[in-house]
Image (cartoon, rainbow, N blue to C red; front, side, top):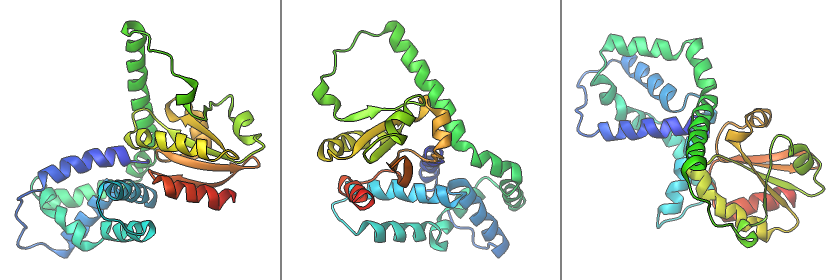
Length: 263
């Protein structure tokens, strides 16, 4: 998901640090505005990043909680809460604990510069390159020093086809049936969680073709498809994209999307 990995890592550090920090007694409206911009630029600099984060944390909360709620209503409420003054103000003291008023204002000016926007706009690519190289390194070590794994049975592989840059046209654009694409990466936790769900759906929807694309091994294709977050589910029909969903999603909801889009 765009920025989501970096955002989660940053959020973990931030939440662990913002504990008993005391609220500054006097704070100008200008400083509050500077802090609001810093927090938003750090965690959700674009609507795309905000939506990805809301989806990721929202779906995780729904899956782990003993309570349920209409998904759309819950996601909308969570998204509004993300940008509320009540939420943003929780982090003021953290930044003020290591930045002076002048430094806070200076940091805001940096985050609003064009070069920072370019950096943020290409951050997903940076993550893909970095984690892709880490994955290659891990695979190389296994190839040199690992033992051969027992062959996986055809039954356990499900009905999902791995698609590459070279096979995309044939497997997706020229397919005679509707196609659902799962764009994933091995280092992506939500992607791994969605894998068995995607396989189950492939076995339950015989009239739909299910394929997957490893984002680390098909960077040019991922760019062409304008993938900005992981996992991303793209729906193709008659050689054209007809819908997509970014982020984790419950099995029943993904089935509803398939039914709604393909009929």
